[in-house]
Length: 168
Image (cartoon, rainbow, N blue to C red):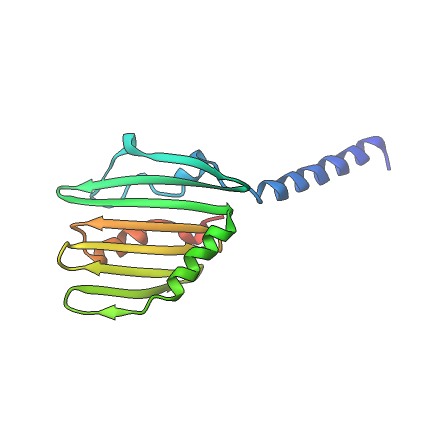
């Protein structure tokens, strides 16, 4: 094997190892913000209000982004957390949800939902006209969507505009 070939093999191995190590990290706030679309049907995206942060608690580390969309009196807030380096926090959310029981009444709808790479709960509070969707995605991400003056059908339409099938 020539020096050039050995060097190429070394570089390929190093790149593969670097990629594998990189996948063990939570996305940065800048990276995670691009998983949420800039535009949602007929809603104005408050680009100035986009927030994101990398949080560290002892050995745990996670990142999140927050987006806000408005249409007249309707407000949709989307929070996306990457718990890649904080699996205990992700597991606590799953444990909390496992105790939920579906409810359908005149004032409240609370039911589970499943998609190909995610599961969670959706709810609608009739008195306040507030809807919420919480999803655990790929064993790593937590997506929380809240709609004020937004029905559950509209919030689900917005969810379909987020490409969760292609999350890392």
